[in-house]
Image 1 (spheres, one colour):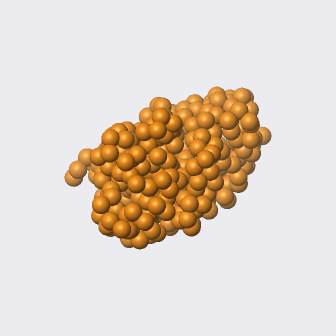
Image 2: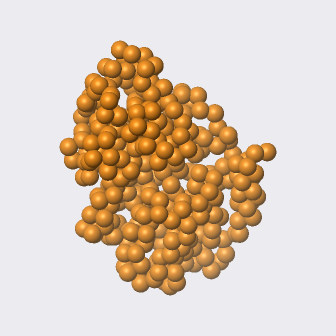
Image 3: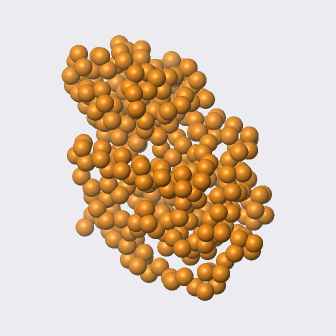
Length: 329
């Protein structure tokens, strides 16, 4: 048993020990809620994208609800440790979880998760999305996406792209580009985005689907060329960079997102109240400006919208992961 299997098997044991819903919890009413602090589990280290988005929302939500919303960082196992703890928390509205962007991908990347991604959570609301930007080294003889695709087709296997880890958004974006463009481009695995950016700037790899904030300084300084963003809309930080769809790759979209969920069994009156409150926060101009400055797109919407997004992305990534031959562990 390797370390990852050990961690996930331990989480499964903990999941089986989840306490049953008490009578008191079943009687939680929106009129009484919240009467104490709420914990928002963020399954990443402090300072990461999920943590940043969670803290921005929690501060305003605390003011709105009149109770503290405390960020509880629980990193590890590709976000699965924190998510599992959210799944087995008391379903009373006082523990919520905001998974990292691999949440809809992980069911296809792991043989045994200690929770059911679709069934063990009640969706509250989508907080924001995190588009990627396709950047290339300045020596690459392409100044737009169509020129890059033409170059790749003319020279099969000559170009390569960095990915920040097997099954990550940057990896799946690269593979989707290859598939939709029908081009042979080599994938080079890295252990994180920092090294991938450094090597793209240095020319050791030719391209990389980066988060916008990570690539922005090098784009501004002229050390990287930005060819397209991976979302349906342009990004405020890069207003002159077209979407992949605008650049000629119709239907291309790879966008990570952060959403807030409650454990299964949380009273509907409570989840509805949270949805209204968080939507109110997300409509605040200061929150929208805060997110835009970090390359994030503010979310919002109904609980059903988030559920549909989760289901759609799970199906989309499951299909691609199988097609490109990534074996679950």
